[in-house]
Each structure stands twice: as C-alpha cells, then as structure tokens.
Length: 253
Image (cartoon, rainbow, N blue to C red; front, side, top):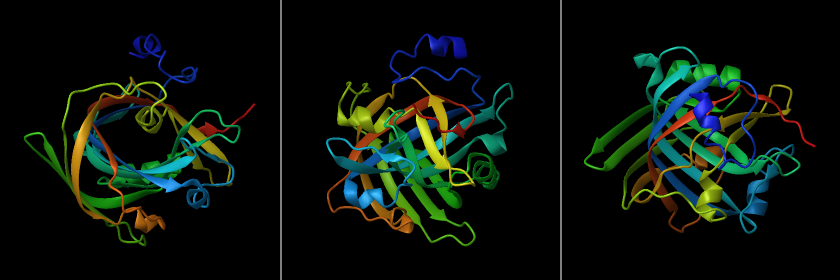
C-alpha cells in the first residue's frame, strides 16, 4: 500500500518520511468551516517555537467535524468498538520556525472514544477531550452534535447540519482552499516545551462545495478564541484515507 502511495506523492510540498507509517485512518463526512482571524490576534495563541502561517497576511481558524473509521495501527486490523468514532477539531495553521513544512496546530480535538482520547493525549501529546457525540446522515445531509464531557475541561458544544452542494474537485495550486486543506503535518509541544511534528499522507482532498446550518458553536470560545460575524468558508469531503507517522522533534535547517 505504501509503495502505491509513493507513486502518488507529487502533490506533496515535501517528500514522504523515510520510515514506515504507524497508523491508518479514514476521515468521513467531513466539513471544513473556516473563518479569517487577524494574524496579530492569533499569534498569542500559537507557541513561540512555531511560526504562524498566513494567507495574504491573514490567519484562519477552522472547525472540522467528521467521523473516523477503520483507525488501526500498522499490520493490525480495525477493532469496531475502538476504530470508529466521531471527532471535532478546532485548528489554525503553522509552520516550523524556519517557515518550512506547513501544518496544523490544534486548539482542541473532541472525540467520542475515551480510549482514543487517552492514547492520543499520552503518545501524541495532543489536546484531546472526551465528548458525547452523535452523527447521523439523512439523504446527503449530515446532522452532527457534540457536547464535551471531559473532567475538568471548559464546557463546549457544537450542533450543525451540513451537506455537499456540488461535484467533487481538487483545489487548484496556490488558492486559499488549497492552502487551508492540503496540510501534511500536525504540530504540538512535548512535555519539555519543545515543538514536535507528526507527518501524515493522503491523496489530494476530494473537496465539494458545501452549505451548513451551525446552530451551536461555542467550541471555539472554549479555547479563548472568538469568531468574526462573517459566514464561514465551507467545504465538504466524503472520505479520505490517511497514513500517520510517529511524532518526532522538529528540526530546521
């Protein structure tokens, strides 16, 4: 499988990692909802060891509801009670300190799987939170609700209905939608305060235009951030197969 992926890696901004991937996932019925945020306001929420990434000088925040399927370690099968669950992310965009390897910085990741939350917090040092979540599909519309239940965490709720409104396409090189979605790394901070990177790989996003009715969205406010009054930029993806590599220290130069 990895060999075939190597043959399809020309869309990536840098080569695939040299070692084997360790985790496979499918991301399904996913909505990208993005809002512009002034870069000066966003900078305070991103660790100094990372560079805030901007598009035409503008930072962006994304709320991304979806559900995972077939989450599994390399060489092991998916386990139904552990491998399928809903997830809701709040994110912005960063690079390494030298401006290389554009990736994602997560403010929060809510998930409806306590085991997955525990493992991700321990081994990936990501801000995962337990949540009670429900995802239902009626015709082509996705009905999504999330309520954070994590002990000691700030309350956070999200409720939306969303659906695709057009055919599948790939974002053109250099466009805002390509900049927002084609990210092949996540960043976090280890227990010593050092930046670490987890690389991922997938084919280009099979995007569709989308519409959404977001009834409750205080998931962003739970991280201390605010959203503008303008409507979000919306994109939908039905499914994406993803491979993930182990996290490692960020090196530059």
